[in-house]
Image 1 (spheres, rainbow, N blue to C red):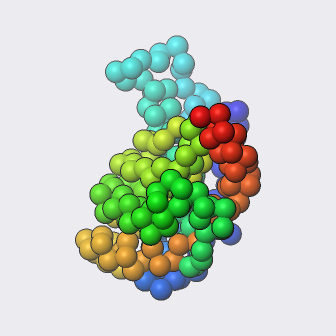
Image 2 (cartoon, rainbow, N blue to C red):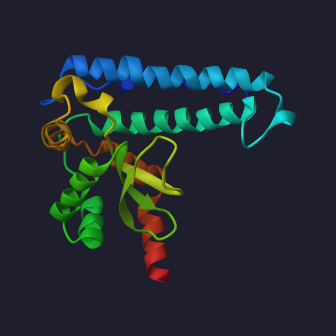
Amino acid sequence: MENFEVAFKTALKPKPVPGLSQRQIDDHFDVKYKGYVTKFNEIQTKLKGADKKKANPNYSEVRELMVERLFNHNSIKLHEAYWQCLAGAGDPSQALKKMLDEDFGSYAAWKEEFKACGLEARGWAILGFDMDSGRLFNFVSDAHSIAPINVVGLMIMDMYEHAYYIDYGATVKRYVEEGFLPNMNWSHAAQSIERYHVLEHRKKLLKAA
């Protein structure tokens, strides 16, 4: 396990979309995302030599490495989903649309709440499927290392300033309304629904409720 390294997935880099420039995407992908990958792998290497016997909740080398591994690990996963969600405008599948209608009242109501999550988040806005309840929820995360547990991420919006500052400065509302929401792509959601058998889980859980 300590020999595991993550790859910098260049194939995930999105093309410029209306509302987000090439410069903004280049900086975000080639600097920030690549940086998380690099540091995760560096931590993996350093953990091999860290003295586990000196572990301490106040401070120890192994504690700091473990804390920052989680930070970088989650950031990698969130960014890789974000790139796929930013691959160009599209519509949710009929099955997902039905779930959104059932859990939020309508697609429009979901989108309104998701937009609010973006405007209030300091880190991420996440549409996720809860594997325990079988329901969809919008989540707000204020840091990479704060994430919902046992949830399949379906739509991910990066709300850190590095996601929009080159194009929009401090005008976060314009990034949400012009840079992300019009460019939402649902292929990542469709793949995740299939990979994690979301529809089967939902049917089983809601039938038992």
